[in-house]
Image (tube, rainbow, N blue to C red; front, top):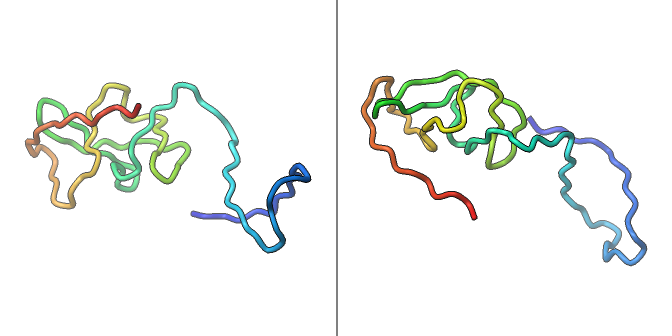
Length: 106
């Protein structure tokens, strides 16, 4: 859900902004150094597909902060769990799958 707020900011006089220009800004409300983040595409409502013993099962999660590409997970899965990054609509509980590790961002 998107919301709009009126915010007043002040910029240095030499900032190259002109009347009529717009900007998009993210305001950090809190910071967590050890947040568990998952790709936004891995969530289906408030569930993810977790892989264990080469079989998948749905796991309900509690969601925290949401970004355009990642979502914070507060509970339901742990660091080290294997999660389906982009589940297909036909995925079924107990289905056998082959895990392919995703490269860590540099």
